[in-house]
Image 1 (cartoon, rainbow, N blue to C red):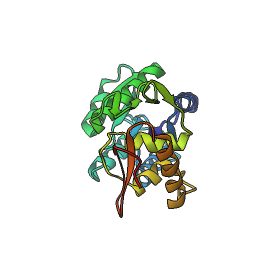
Image 2 (image 1 turned 90 degrees about the horizontal axis):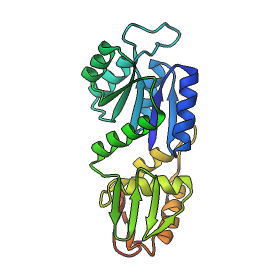
Image 3 (image 1 turned 135 degrees about the vertical axis):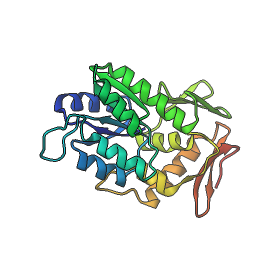
Image 4 (image 1 turned 180 degrees about the horizontal axis):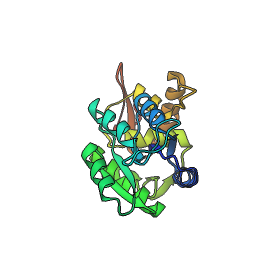
Length: 232
């Protein structure tokens, strides 16, 4: 998953960044409300981890936190990215404010990092209408383990090929545009070109040859993962 982490506490931010990265997620970080609003507008994310008690740039935090501002703006422009709000334990008013502003779930601090990831998986699964185990022919995705299998054998993939196949498998049979794939894989300072994306697709097709699943090119649209042999 590509996750936006909005957190101004340096220690907590670094711990979460390391934990989510080790779990295989791509994480972009915002430290204040202006940065969060900018990144949220510029880049599509699978989920957002949002601290409500967030300062504006160069300012002290407000009682409810200006993280609400970024959340409200996102919902007002029709952005439905799943949002997990991080609140101080026992601060009922924070939870209510976050949920009223459009958050999908909340978690009180301090929290277990394993629970953060479990809640993120649940939110994304609900948003995408997919389960933890997704099957297509002999290809299987175990979301909880973040592993692909062909039959009983693990399919080992480099990070970017993994993310392409994850997106195509969420769920399979769904047309995914080149723009969506490029945005998911690009860094903010370096866009992923069409040639690089096509190279990832070409390598994946070869690796899926024995799975009974193939990637079909939809001219002018993007790609689609479906049951069947290798697709052009």
